[in-house]
Length: 459
Image (tube, helix red, strand yellow):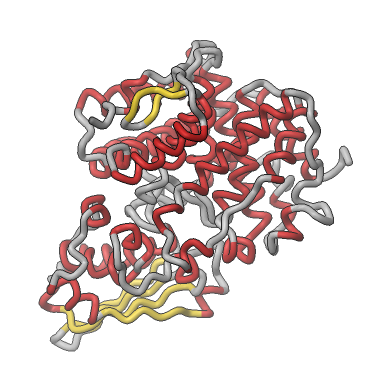
């Protein structure tokens, strides 16, 4: 049992806690935190955020000191639930090609909620977040595309990641940490059926429940209760029962490689990450040729098959569906040359020019492209102009992928674009707080996130 992939993964987490965090990982951690604050601010005053905060208060009553986006402080459990849901509303929280999940929302959220009490140092916060990314991404990669077609991996693998993040932040020894991961895996759930049934507004419950369950798993293990040890590879573990078909050596392979945190994608568009490469291709064509809407006769979008299993809304009937409609986001980008939060928040879905552009767009899937998934996200966009000229762009990687990363300056500009209600003082404070994780000299400082970083409470 001690020689299982799961045991080797736990031993790896323990080694990470003991060794120095290299500068590149520290910089990437600061970026992940900035991305998380961007996602939370962008949705903190959305109507959906009010609902999630109300649920958090109902499920986790009681006062506390943990800040909440757009709200007064709650206890750590309530704040973690609310913030996880809110940070996922806009679909701009980070992603991962191979694991097919959102790692930051399940890794950062529980740690910052636990840190609000002032008992954690900056190094403990960093270790917890790094552990969360390490576990959820390795488990997600192992579970693979077959699993991700039926289950939202942010909810399944994410529950184990949240357990790791909370367990490491709480200082659990290796044996208890292993139990916490097994207990978190027992609670792993998240059906994509909600997309098929048009329940998109509830998608943010997946990371919220994953964080809740992961924190509870860490508390349970700390109390001395045992959990499943072969929670992925066992005969009745996640891999066999939840349709796993990825490489199981992702659990414990390449342990000397840079931390999995360095392999996440920071999202360039405010929609489902499955739709990014066609949007990047359209952006490339508009930038290269200066094409205007009236010149376009037709648009052909060829994309990998899995994309439409998750983002298969042909035309949105409500704002919550815009993030999952390739035809909508492509038409919006072609018309205005941009795609912003406002286009997802309050769209005029029956606008004549929007519908006219949408009618020119053909979306089709490619099995050839699917064979490159999830390693790549291939998409080809062809614009046929009224002059008869054809313009074509092929994208296999997304802007914000590790191979095409944001600079620190560009990330700050992205934050202001995705959170337009943020003022200069708040932006500067968030940037400064995130940057402190780069400085090794501040590792021993207490690391309670100031409430001001989470924005003013909604009236």
